[in-house]
Length: 597
Image 1 (cartoon, helix red, strand yellow):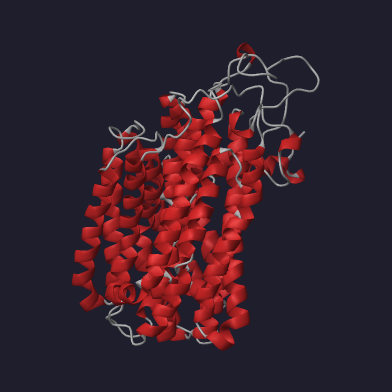
Image 2 (tube, one colour):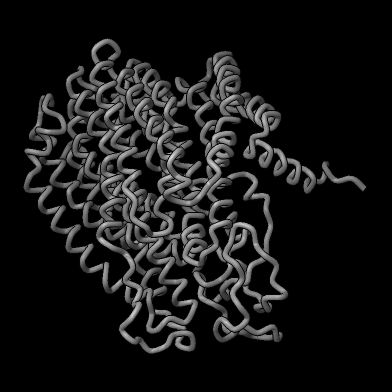
């Protein structure tokens, strides 16, 4: 995400010429349907596409009464729409993340943090890689610009339907590639396990689990394709709900089959959950593709049919995502040489520490189609302003969340995981790893946001792959050196060091290869909340240590972090803190006690 809404976006207001209510499904985020004004009457909208010309298709009339509303993807996107879309995406993604924690709690309670869990987590590498490559950072980064270009061409009256042509050209080939890769992975499961974790005490169990999780290559690929297409069409509800479906499948399988199948039930749940991710989106995508604005579509001439997504672009994006996710391979390879439970402690620590990053990237997930559409329409200035704002807000959010994670780590792990086979010793080990891993959260967030900017125009560039390879080399060398004296903490520190190198290289090289951001300005915006996060973390840790109850301690620590971080960040000029405090004042004025006459 992934990607979360910044506070100022939530405070922004805007009116959009959006699709009619009858074109929207229940729960979709859409601008209100109003009569479409002329260009002279339409003010420029910050953060959204420029208003279409008055002659851009039928229904563009200022006359009162019913009108033929434009397609959702063809309507101007305003800050109000982005706020609602980001909020919806954040809420559903947070619910999916919480359900993921329930999943981890279920695994920890039933199987503990021993050799069986380590075997499953080696097989878990497959869905981790598939999610990054096919849903989050890989396929979507290549597909969304392609769909944005097709939608822009269709809005301009291109011959035929470029969107349907793009689907017909890409989906069958990609589905065949996904199926073949999953089958090959299942056949080579023993060799894969041997490479990933040569020190496992029970490699046979890991092989069985890997063969079950190999099915997710196809299901995740199809789910990622649906998500990219729907987001490009400004449909965010179904894509945001996929991890709810996924984790529901895993939890159900573990509860129903865990007693008989052991940890293999969790692997079977991965296969079931992957299918549910596709089923959650197919009906919505089918409705989008069936809809045809016949008045705006001319007969196809055979030229410019919307097949704009080359093999080189797809390769550049997927290789970057593969290289980034290879950090997990290094960590588990090194962790397999440590005592049983090391891989589990590292996995649980990452899952919890990454929650602030996931939420902070929700905004970038929502605005990525906006940036891609702006570049497709030639509006570079609007794309630059959006990217710079997203980077500043994402940095502020992840640092605030990271401060809570570090300050309240013992209470968080105890509340979430310490039950059943997960002991107090496991909690202490996980807390140590989590605090070290959190040092790289800002860099992980910046990498997730920056990579979208490199490929938002749909152009091929290999610089991100080189930057990620450099960071991966740092992770490998530092991890091999640190694992001896510091164990899993050394592995986590190597991860933070490697991803920080990658983030610095990506930010330094963006201006000449992607969206032309003002690099010095971005560096300044990103650095400001760091000065607020350090004292906020120390204050939060002190407050959390005053209470014996984990829940009360977590609440006290989180409130203290907010009380210190927000005003200090505002004093330092951090955009996120300024916007958050402005939103709080706006909400306070609406309350009865805040009104004055």
